Image: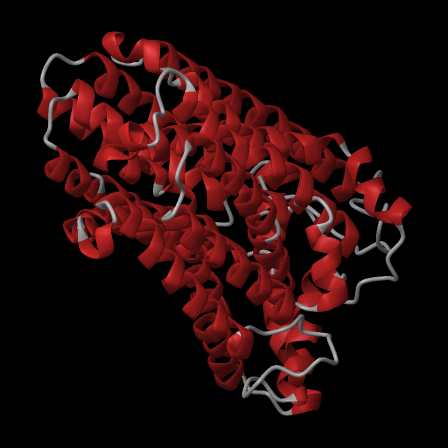
Length: 488
């Protein structure tokens, strides 16, 4: 057995000992291993399901523009030429501007108040969409929507990372984003049902899509005010949740894993210091590449199905669901594999390879049915890469404010990917089957694979140096933790 194999076995043994130590450390609080598992399941049910459900409605509100476009909004609001692309794009202008401070604000105000308030606000804006009389008003509402939705995703990602250990977050991020896929899968079917209200109260069917979904958002926001939970170490109480003894147990196990539960007092310099690590920008570029694909699909898959593959309006809305339903299953499987075998980089590469297989099928095959089949590959690979890249980032960072900066930069570049996704599929390219947009998506897949390869190589080298005692890992924001190693 060579030296690398021996060290690999030693690392696995150390991880197993650390996991056992996490449970044994809790004996002071009389928390058994079985009770610990029950506590984790309670957190899953309360935290992951609720923030995932709210994210589900967030994605639905953000991307139902395509359903409205198919249902007649383009004609009614004179969205000719590049106007539809502009309407989809402007959302990300305010989204990018307002999201960096969100991870700081959520620490100060608390998740319950912050997340539920912004959800209520964007729900009200969505209702306003249904009464938009012109392109200009719709444009303004999209800007406001971007400002309110800006803090939700980075806030949730940051909140989830504080409750779980490094090798638990992959599956939780997958479930969180899986519920978003449910939104994407069901939004078309729900929209098809809502446009049947055409003529009710003198409103067109596409307007009811926004009004009803806006009302649902406001109702969920009210529920979130009572049920959302705070950070594990916070003194702010969460309604009918964990006892202080159980929260202490969570704090101990997360500290044993990475030693950064308690956030130091906020200093702008400490927060900005996270940007000094080039790897943080590597994670951000992975987010850009992955989200260029996901937003391209969200905004233009319905138009591709309708205009290029020739499906009717009703069939198009229903055909959106199956690719996203499959991607949800695939995403959970990949999240489970990543946590079970402690893999991050290979999962990202596998997802991008799957998307690379699907894009040429979707764009170039002569048969419409086969092209639609290609959308399953693209959708699965692109959507699965979002939680996978979040887990990749979360596993390789220490320090609350560095984690907060990394979450903000990830979402900022993901938003820039949303802008790119809004632009690469241009109306004038419809006759060619949106080929330039497909080329751009292929380039994003290849770039993502290259970045992951570079990062994994750097992790491997640094882990070897740490094994030999030549380097201490992730000490810029926190005290040295001997057992910490990068995950690749």
